[in-house]
Length: 77
Image (cartoon, rainbow, N blue to C red; front, side, top):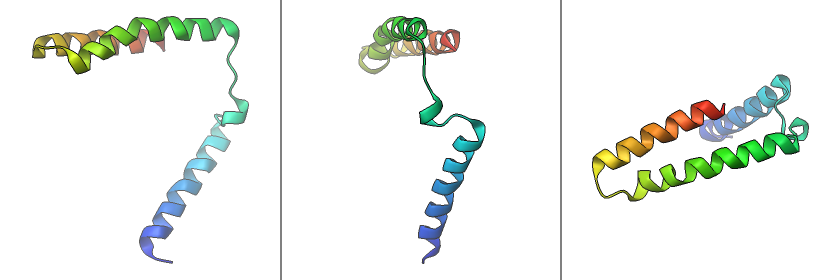
């Protein structure tokens, strides 16, 4: 086994172990209907800023959209 393959395998196994130990495995994750509605509301409010980050004509418009997008992400946490 080459070093590159061994390193990749080690990283994958370490990641799986970390998620299992921390209790964040996909089998344990379930959100309530209320939380899902709040998440959809945040996604909808962030979608226009995400669009502007990519498609705005001016650089200052992209930076402004990025700033609003990040503040929206942080408020959603």
